Image (cartoon, rainbow, N blue to C red; front, top):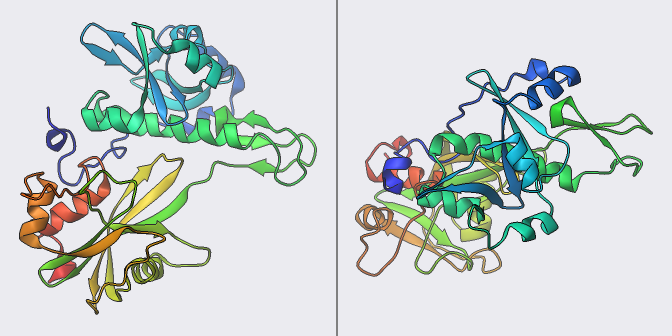
Length: 316
């Protein structure tokens, strides 16, 4: 199965949620402990930007038994993600030392999640739950102390809250909104590339939404700051959870009112206009000069693909 089959237009990675989040169970410690001990319960084991998978024959399995995860060195304290067909699914973390112990083993792999998603190692329908596990594990690892008084906090609500025993402050996982936009001018679209992109790859411009800023203003501001292009007619397309570490990509389109590109070299290596025919070659990986668009697992690919097919009304 190719990436185009795994992530058809309108369905990027991390958007197909197979879990019932069962939020009503998060405050029931007794019930969660009972679920965790059931043979049917499973866990995703994550380490930084990587996922631990069990090798089985020619394939790999990301959904581990609780005992398997513990044998691999999972940290104590599991995060309740939800229910799948009545069975509990948890997220668990792995320390650097434990991850090091797994390297070189034949029965297990610690692999970067993004690469596995692109290569189809992990079924697309599981990626949303894995993203949830990765985001929450990362948050707990980074927020062990109260931002108000500095006291060590405790995990509560099945991992969906941390509570300070000293000042009683409650801390909740954060999600950072990011606008990602396809700006067009007639039969041209604006794409840029960062230095860390693979050679020849271009993608949509993107940036974080700032405090007290609307999505529309963020699209206009980020586009101008990175490329010098003014735009209008901002329209929403769809969102994509992005667990690096915990963002929500807000896909938008906009119409340019200027065309002279002035690249912010601190943000981008290059930005320029591409016509519809060239953009089509880029997202299908058939460009004669080796230029490429974003991978189908990313929402940027779907913004460009939708425009290439003439489905984007903002370019009309």
